[in-house]
Length: 361
Image 1 (spheres, one colour):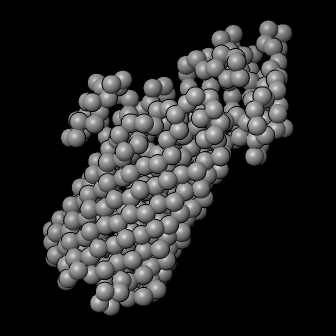
Image 2 (cartoon, one colour):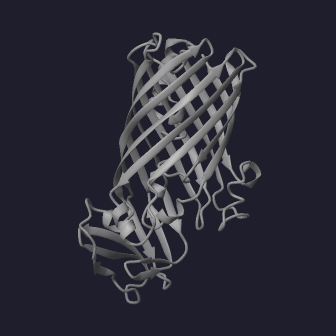
């Protein structure tokens, strides 16, 4: 691979920065092993009744037989060895998730830099340090159904540019179990921030307001559409604890810390590769106490099990199929989808199927 092509590949990875930090269950202290200068993956991610082989959706009491929970998207992931021990990777993904109201269309991204500190010597593992950033964003999210907010019932709710951003650090240990087998274990954590640009509500009279939290105990509605004579100006005080920063009073923006650990078993030969991994995540969000006080269940953990089978019929190109199972659907995977109004829906199991093509060079 020429130097110009390497530079272009480097810039692409660092700039696009799909799965987000998701797929951490496949972390290894030796990315690119067996020795590769780089790799690319293009995949199609899906969940619907046609691929629900574990019958997770069929067992859902409320949404069995519906399209609620359908997921579709594409992702591009890539990695590049900058030196023998320094590895750069990144990715971009589209996400479309059907909900009980309007679907969520989002973009997921990630970028990471990893350094291999030691090599595997006998019982001593290879150790890697990894720092990553990842997140999701959407142009807007709509809820075209009745929503009660601070005692007032609105016809529609619209959130402009909801997003989340995470910064994460991990320590990874990898042991070689033989010429064709590896086992990896990791632990780490990070900080998360969920935010948005504007929060709009609409009354049945056709009055739309931009809701703002200008001070800790005051939320005001500013008319953005409708007849000023007909539409009342909303203004009321919060009877709640002091938000930690503007926007948290709307119970849509918050900060969080999380910790996770997991591991992976890898087996491969010249043509086949299989991975089996798990990850457990625990979150501590600033809005969870408010959600709990409102009598809504809080879901702050997720167990993810993943398996992948790959076949390489050509020297540098192969195909793969991957499945993921989650104990609590998408908790920690798309943080901005979790807020005061959606928290109670994260008690369900969930899964994804991915098929695609991989290339190494």
